[in-house]
Length: 99
Image (tube, rainbow, N blue to C red; front, side):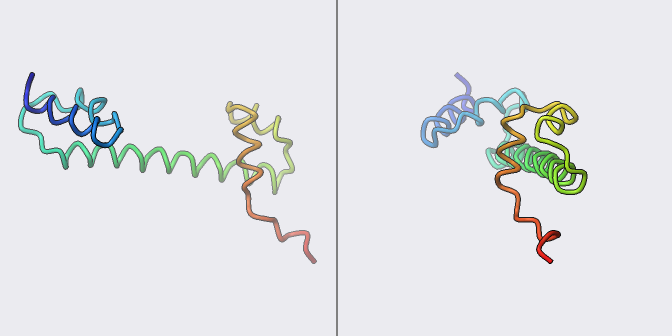
């Protein structure tokens, strides 16, 4: 077993996070630093967070501005209705009707 494989498995076992092993295919060359692997994992998380933020923003606009129902939003964005309902439940209160 290569030293890189051992390091990835050890980090996975110690942290309970198997992304170390999952990212191994992205670094087939020898001598890759673990910080490089962590950077890739971190960047994937950032991209996922940005995408989730975009979806939440779309849902908020469709719900608050255009008064779409949760089902209409789910159909429009091709995402599960439960996801839409969870996001709507966590939206900040709209102050546009507070006058």
